[in-house]
Amino acid sequence: MHATVSLPAWAFVLLAALAGSAVLDRFLRPAARAVIRRRANRVIDEMNARLPVRLPPFKMTKREVLVDQLRFDPKVLEGAEAFARETGTPREDVQKRVARYASEIVPAFNAWIYFRAGYAAARALARMLYRVRIGSADDAGLAAIPDGSAVVFVMNHRSNMDYILLSYLAAERTALSYAVGEWARIWPVQSLVRATGAYFVRRDANDPLYRRVLERYVAMATAHGVPQAVYPEGGLTRDGALRPPKLGLLDYMIRGFDPNGTRDLVFVPVGVNYDRVLEDRTLLLDRSPAQGRASSLETIGGTLRFLGQNLRLLVTNDWHRFGYACVSFGTPVSMKAWLESRPFDLSAASREERFAAVQALAEELMARIARIIPVLPVSLVSAVFTAEPGRAQSEIELKAEVLARWRELEEAGAQVYVPRGDQDYAVTFGLRTLLQRHLVTEQNGLFRAVPGELPLLRYYANAIARAQDTLPTRPAS
Image (tube, rainbow, N blue to C red):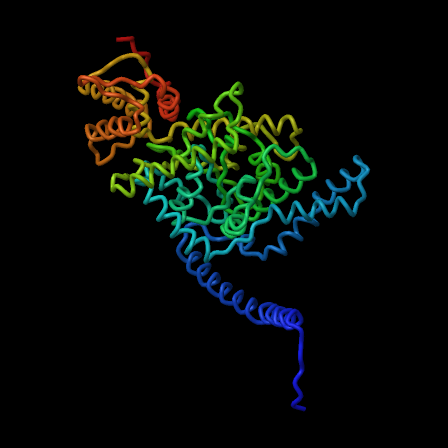
């Protein structure tokens, strides 16, 4: 009964590992899940009592259930059958691909991570890097959105900070679900992104089976009223100007929309602008087909240089925030009202007719976004320098030119943000920022654009290009 049993060291280590795994699987992991679930449920109850746009049940459904629901969606099964028939692929292999695609796309929303950890991190990062401001908001229009509507925020895409900035500012209204590119599918970013409710999208995927699975997930989320955020441009602007809209996600949302149903589909235009975009120089590396896209090495090198410069400034106590980041919320567009104003039957439309309608809607949304993109000091001062690149101006001449354009923009209805309500300070701030970045040089009291930095100055001027187009042509000095 008390005999000693000897074991080889490897056997003891193996038994200890198996015992530890059993304890982890049977006790610690279920206990941790229960604690997280209780916290998440408390957050859900609190948010639903406070938020104007409640969290839909679909968003809180277990991920495994949503994956199965997507895999066995009738239209997904129909697409899988057609794919197997056309390509000669065995049905079992096609079903495995569908399961892989569904598992890749479907998020795993966690309210505690989104509203507690995620919101705190987004708020801290946004406010550490920028002076964050809301330029304008149609509060009456936002408040008038019918309960239960599927709300989609559509915005221009200038920086990867857009995700963080909008999530932070919109957290007082709802929890947003983003379409995120494959860049985020790395550990541990992937799990964190999924926990915030984002879903992964393969850019330029040509696989019809994948597109069918993605289409059905977007349609399901929209039909269940999941609040979403979409970039109609499909990617980051490379030259600062708005890009033509891509129709993929908008088409997926509209294709399953029932104009006679109880749930409306409401698009909220959002305009965002920055005095400094963190990745501006990297984006300019691939601004033209002749140059090609920036290589990974170039991107990493630029990022490391940027971080090194800012760490040096931080150590020497010379670091400052990157100016203003401003967001404006426009008047919501009801899909029901939009369809009622046109002789168009969505249910009876052909593919070509539906795409023409989606194109018209996308162009209208982009025009609304363009009208509310905030005019910030750096963009406006850059526009003055790029209008006459070789001209040297005194500070008085420069301020007079900027303020004249400012007044004209305001009269034209542009969303001009004036820091501290002081136009003189705003111009001084914009000029100082360009001087600090060595985009503008001063000599004998005259300011001139640095010739080699004109692409970057145009990048910031292009942010308000649509607003500038409304101004009368100015004679050369």
